[in-house]
Length: 323
Image 1 (spheres, rainbow, N blue to C red):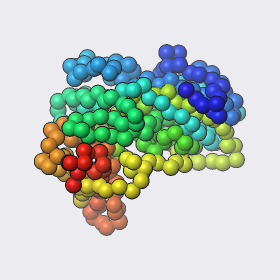
Image 2: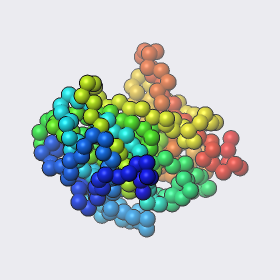
Image 3: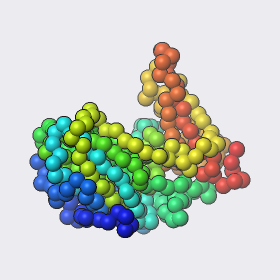
């Protein structure tokens, strides 16, 4: 629940306000004033089709149409095209569980989708700020919304999968509680929506999912009329590593004349490392990369080849298995 310092002015329940497309003709579920605090109840990315007792067999009947159920939209009084909507992410709470999926087939999710043709699922128990994986591996959690944005200026229904200049499926894992997000307003009221909660994610979300989790998110809204931006901007204190501090990492690299190819190489090499030297199956390694490994470009100036590295935090392993 929100603290006394973040007294909630409005509560938006997922049962009353879920949609799965960006559309500036959607009616707002409510209109709020600048300065108001809103508590959003957000379903997990499967729209409640999976739960803490789910198994991989459940993926065979998973309906992908409602994926990315967003809570909203809400309108903010006074927001006009050309303004900036400021969103302070005050508090983010999870429901105690999450899941990571490998979804092959028609969704073709994941950096290495063709190399992992079988569905896979890991259901995470989230307790004491930790997500528990196989072999004693523990992932620190710091929840954030994978999708957060306002309605686009273009009419009609638009997919929630690609991010856009007004936000959306950005998957910025640093948009945690305490962060401030600024969004360019494209339509009257902004029509803000939020969802796709993650308990944790590596930069890259390489298997197509992080730790997907239902969340409750408390936001404060303001309108900045004297400022104009062309895309989302944000202020955050991280985490920029899994623990939020400098820590020992194991890195693998990809070097290629295409950044996507270099990224794939770096992750393939990390999967090899996790399989050959850490004892994980290749599918377990792929999922672990998606929730705990950060992809970072190291250089994009030494034409014709670029360098991308994958960073694995050592602290997630039991002490006896660290390097």
